[in-house]
Image (cartoon, rainbow, N blue to C red):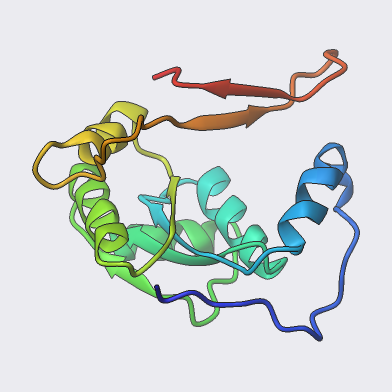
Length: 160
């Protein structure tokens, strides 16, 4: 596996005010090696900013997969610093999903993160019987949701 580990000298930072509710999760993530995370099609502000902020916090080491020109335009439009991040260029969302899954199969990353493509596109690539990530184990996905007015964070699984 081609893992990237967090530097022991990296300072532990408190969760930003925007992410304060996730403090326990963020601190738990800081205690494990930083995984290379393949980010499929991060072509909107939310998915690109989320991946880059997680990278800036050393929670993940993002590897972006999608139309490079579109990703760079999104970053410029929303003042998101891409630094020297690696981008694997693909022509469209279906190709982004397929290439992202292929990179995980090739051990170029250990986590797969959904960007601005439809969940069924990504899960179609993940569950493909010939090129997907299928094993004898059950495949599942989860997202975390913070609902204003709801006291607890929600974890929603398999909701495509």
